[in-house]
Image 1: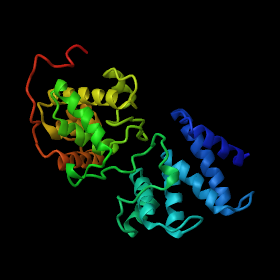
Image 2: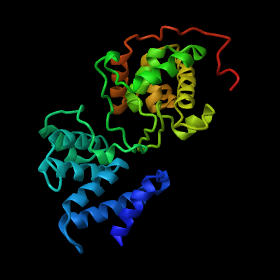
Image 3: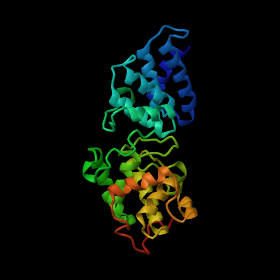
Image 4: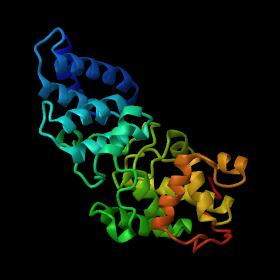
Length: 286
């Protein structure tokens, strides 16, 4: 029964499994993987177990990310690869997995390691495994950023948003992956949650141009609200404008403070260079 389910999943993933099905799919994948890894009720097959863990890891399960990382770190069913194991442990640790957090400290830091093939298919990612892969400088943006930059530089002037700020947000939010989906269901290049996409009339968050338009509109709104203060704008983009208003500044959340730091490494101006009040605000009609 479980073997038949794994075949069904492969077919389902080919057409992109709906987000609401992910918890059930993840549970079934992990259950079958555990049985295959330990030979419980079926013949032991560690290679197939690793594949199923990998598929569940792609759907955002920290337990699967940890389990697949452990198999890679120990060469169990797959060739040993400490670099990829570190990436998986790091992703699981970011979601609060305690054992993964300890193992992250035991392995060499390798955020540049390529993902295995089973996680590199053209499917929406359920977790951003590259939370800050190009943080050194904008010059280190990946090749995928070139086409995104064309869109940003064409659209940003209408919203009076500095293209470099938008590029920094995209780098940190999605790593320039138009199909990225976070565990909180933030989607696309600028990681718009459904409510934000609806607020700014984004019909398809996975369409790069539509997503960028929505993200620029939101950035413009935040720049207006926070008088061009880039730190507050970044904090609001991550934690919500309400959180920044309630805390009268950057909220004391570790994730948000790290996010603000990441943005600042890529966009160093403390005040948005194009900020000014404008009667031509493209949001005024929304």
